[in-house]
Amino acid sequence: MDLLTLTIIIAFVLGYACIALEAVLKVNKAAVALLMFVVCWTLFMFNPGLYVTTSGGDVTHAVGDIIERHLGATSTTLFFLMGAMTIVEIVDQNGGFNFVRDALRTTGSRALLWRITFMTFLLSAILDNLTTSIVMIMVLRKLVASRAERLVYASLVVIAANSGGAFSPIGDVTTIMLWNMGMITAMGVITKLLLPSLVSMVVPALLLQFTLKGNVSSVADDDADDDGQLTALQRKAVFCLGVGGLIFVPVFRSLTGLPPFVGILLVLSVLWIVTEVFYSRLRLVNDNALKRVTRLLSRIDMATILFFLGILMAVSCLEEVGVLTKLGVWLNSVSDGNHYIVTGAIGVISSIVDNVPLVAGCMGMYPITATGDMATDGIFWQLLAYCAGVGGSMLIIGSAAGVVVMGLEKISFGWYLRRITPVAFAGYVAGMLCYALEQMLL
Image 1: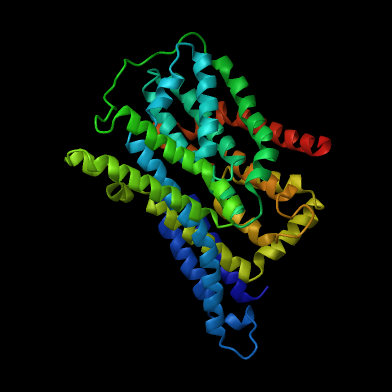
Image 2: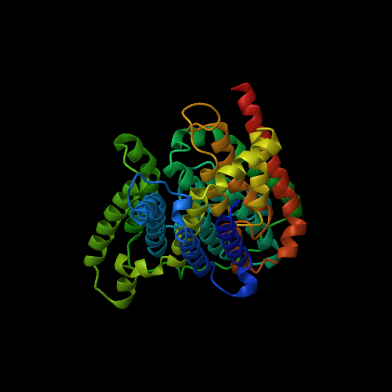
């Protein structure tokens, strides 16, 4: 390995370490990811001829074309995420999720556990695991008064959100990436991973239900969240257009062949127009103005979008210098080509570090093939979608859903490690065994 390639790897590893230690360093991971992206490609330009071969052309121009190609592929994921986040924000701010609270309300502790688990699982598949976790924690605060009880429910929200996102092409950033790049199809990942994902959720829920007894420590009814702006019928219309539109995106792609982000922008534009019509008929007071899409766009988490941009572009640099290909060959030789070992290890690692760069790295390490386990909807890509999504549940810091729930409910790392990690690991392994059994029988 030459010195320049080694320097690029060191820059990436140092940046990755800073991202993993974000809570300690108090530096936003998006800033580090963007710096890592720029540093890696700047180092690349010290000797681009080492990696790029041209037939008499300008090497600098060739490198520019390479970066633009990677940026184009990355942008499809980023625009999809921005559109989806905006849609969910519109639905949430206009009271579209009020029905979730009403559907979950019950007096029995164990009954509430199963309602929360399945509702989170389903919503995560339609929305995304991060947004679903936020919605469910807000709903839990209106249903459960005891913090001790709420911690158990909140932990199950993390597990169910990650499991629900793993079998859906739009449920997790990693599945969105794999779907956008053609590694998996919507129908393929749903049919093959639905049952394993369900098992990975049900097993922990079965084990945790024994920690709850009696009735729920209920919170007094509070209808203050009814914004009084849109009517009940209008709120339902916003919910149906937003959530129904997200479900329609895979159908749109199969009908038109266009990238998923085009479908998500179609849904966003329709929802935007409908809400503008609704609010144009209301007296434009400050509360109304704040709920219009032009204002809600400022609430989108651009730091997360920039983080994905930085990390994906930095990984693409490693791909261009050939590091990922060599790493893939090494992993195959160590595991003797066993995809369950490789993806299973990636799932465990994803509970410690972010699963986005891990999946991006695998996409660079293993090129898609026409047939076999590496083909579209091949065993490897489906296992990768499952393991990277569900594996993050094993630690509270292992997924975006876990991190946001940790912040909202002040769940300590140690408490989650003692109480939840063993049952989450049991569900993770059970889901992999379920997938293996599916492959043997079907």
